[in-house]
Length: 138
Image (cartoon, rainbow, N blue to C red):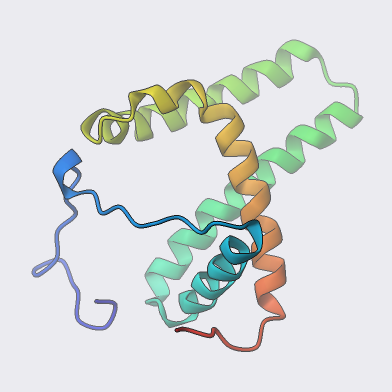
């Protein structure tokens, strides 16, 4: 897909019937190993795709690090809350249409916790993956 796809022969389908479900890993160790392997596969992505994925992850890291820095500097609580809610609102504007189409609107209430934990997980996974020599596929 990565080598042959382009705008004329590829489309994104966001519909509940287009979802593909797979069996989840049964242990945290197996899940971690799978995610490290997936992260290693990203080296084969097109440059533009790598850039977009890096930008998304980096913007989240910068956001949360800035929030922590503002907390340490004893910024006003309403400034911190306003900045956080603005980011959350912008994310919901982007993600809610897909949540609606995929019939997972109930995730909206979990979004703040999922965003924080996902971004922390991706940062740790990215650091570990830098030292992983080669992805091992079955």
